[in-house]
Image (cartoon, rainbow, N blue to C red; front, top):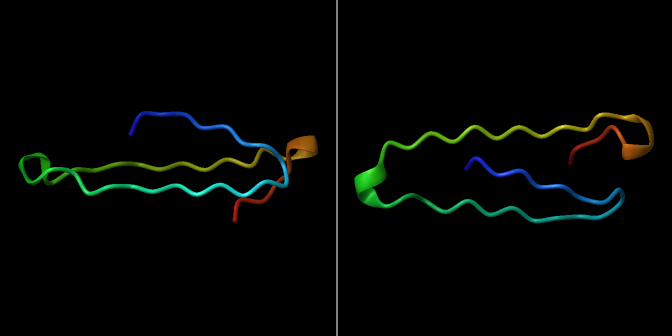
Amino acid sequence: CNKTYYGDVGKTYYLELHRPKEDKVPYFCRLTFNAPGGELGDIVQ
């Protein structure tokens, strides 16, 4: 976690999250997706 990703309008990206090692469980990761609108678009699919 704690990474920022950027993308291009009209392009599809894949995001894969791996399970943490057993000694790191429980592990919480907050994901936030933003679509600010305007020429950047307003949909996250």
